[in-house]
Image (cartoon, rainbow, N blue to C red; front, side, top):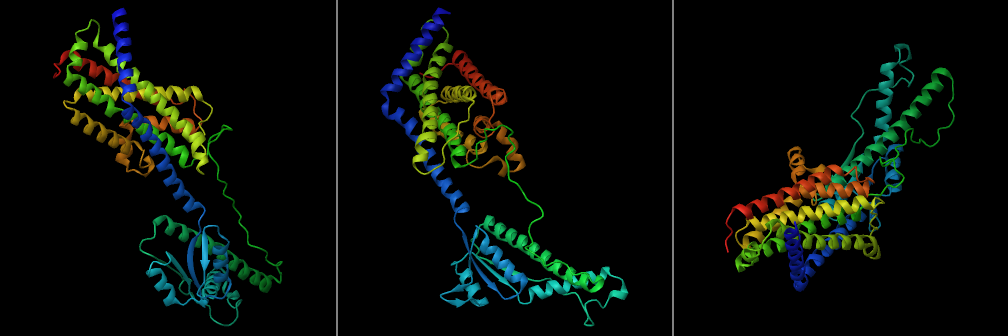
Length: 434
């Protein structure tokens, strides 16, 4: 036991000295995650602001100077998402001009409300009402015949480069406004029927307001609820990505020791080879903990100075520390495994970097898991970066405690134990090239 402890302390001291002396390499371990968090957060935050704050310019040609057309245009104007333009250079829009402007890419969306849309809606409502009334009441709307016609028409023109999210937004808005106007027209027709049939004059119709309110809430029952934003997602995502990128210097260190003969001399020392492995784990473990601490400081203090939201780490600090420590173990364990299995420095650097990128891609760092196919949503559960990211999301966004993230902690720790065990077995039972 004493030999193991002495060898472990010596190995940890050696690795720490090597890290401190390699100032350029050590600085990259902190500069890279800092740059990733800053750049990706600012990029995505700008995207969110474009969607949330900037209005989408929409060309509108209303050829129905009646209830339907007027209410649709008013609804678009009152919306916080659309900037309605009905004239260009002081001239009222024509259909040809609207098409040309959208086709040229000057505007992404053009809306044209066809003539007599309101009258068409009224006639269709009257026809449907007559189908419900007894035959003796067929003349309630006068002697003129009432016949069904094609539904009122709104033509929406899109620039081919328009994103689907914008298309869905404008179509949903038009459908909502259309439904409200149809209900308003229906109310007016029924009012006249009541007056004619029952001699009951309804009170003047007021503003046709919503009958159902949709309240947006978060499902967390705890009072502490973090609002999802670019910072809450990007800081943990790219911090985890950077933590696992420690595989490159760690694996490279193992390769250099083998090629220089240092590894062989270390193995001639009394005691288990596991002590040497754990010494490396400890040194790089401390580096990763400092990486994570730097990411938290940036998220809490630096990003707000740049006009970005502030990171809310929650109040389960013990869970946050334990999760970070377990991720650090998993990342160092993976680095040890890659360095043990790789034959050359080139192999370790290429495989290590590409494998981390792949694990990040399938783990949800770049593409949200819910946007993946059913097959990929199963595959993503195999990535340790996904376990790590889900753990941080649970703490930051779902206010989870230590017991809530226990499955993620267990998976990460077993991954670490597996990596170290395989590396130890290979070092013990397989001849390593010197």
